[in-house]
Image 1 (tube, one colour):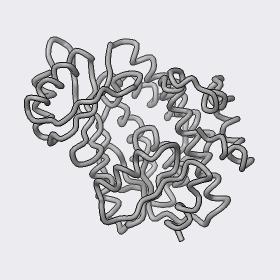
Image 2 (tube, one colour; image 1 turned 30 degrees about the horizontal axis):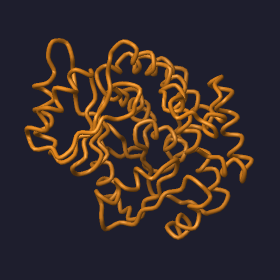
Image 3 (tube, helix red, strand yellow; image 1 turned 135 degrees about the horizontal axis):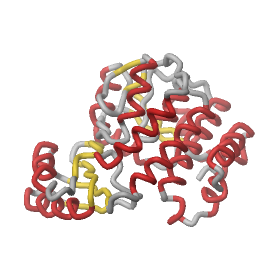
Image 4 (cartoon, one colour; image 1 turned 120 degrees about the vertical axis):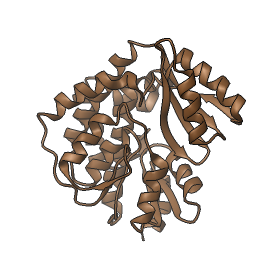
Length: 295
């Protein structure tokens, strides 16, 4: 992750060096060498993803003229979106991500939890299944509404097993266990939100230079108060990504550029808004596609 970005840009190298220093963790080395098992652990994965996203943003700004009409970020990606919108600088964003990752990792230790993707079942029936499967102190709930037909549930592992059985009985085509560190975007992450609230108390957020569409509500805002509250509550709230993309389209966005590692969000854009153009930029090989999109 990010190896060619670091080779091409002093600003990208500085982002990763800053991340290593803030976290006191070998983020750069793990991004280059792995192992994948360590890279996907919560305390590493979150700063690694945001660092790579910010490094990609730095390279894009060096090579292209970027004038986005609006921004959004999926889950921890909201921190990178805030930097793109001028709400936070890179250091503040990475410091807050480190706090978030540490707090979420600690919360994960209090429950045997995980997440699973449910393919081919509508939201209403899956909510019913989650309610029925949440029993005896074990909870499961909708965590990510990613695209039509792709929903993510999160919670205690035994409750996820129960909801998987009910989802299959209700007509779900597939249930896929996710390789994650715990039950993110569920009630089990409320202690992490408290830690973030304390961290934000010492921070000043700037008014967004461009509109930001929020995960939790799909509302459009530039207001620092709303932006602050969003990052505090989204750790235990569902990511309403379908509505987020639809709101961006309502704002007039017809070209979507995913900035950061992978192409998952680009795929979600294409499934949700098939008539728009979408591309990703996470490596130098993606530059031509990004340039064509923003030209």
